[in-house]
Amino acid sequence: MKIQLNGHKPKVIVGIDPGFTSGLAIIDLEGKLIFVGSLKDAGREVIVKEITRYGEPVLISTDVSPTPEFIKKIAAAFDSPIYTPNKSLSVDEKRQIVSEHNIMKQHDTNRVDLHAQDAFAAALKAFKKSEINSRR
Image (cartoon, rainbow, N blue to C red; front, top):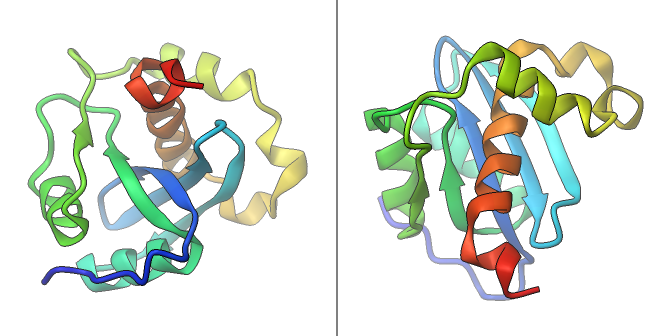
């Protein structure tokens, strides 16, 4: 399944925390949060559809190493590169990254559970480490 976008959507960085409850975070190329939330029992098509509502991914990220197969399949759907940290982010590191941004006041706190926070941490880590950020 390859997604063909019309090129009119904004470019975004996506963080995903896969699982029965999948966390999803989408940030713009300046690191600003566009969407954060969790989806229960969401398969690949649901996640892809949710991402396309907000933009065209230029980078898909995860907080664990090695890269989960689910992340590889999502990235393949968009023909997008993947950011995987050298080693899985610790709980403390993820909390530190998230605490630097007050997402709880910006979004419905019912949708910002630990899965969503992990996805947000993955997206921010990818943003900070990527060439996208260094070109600004």
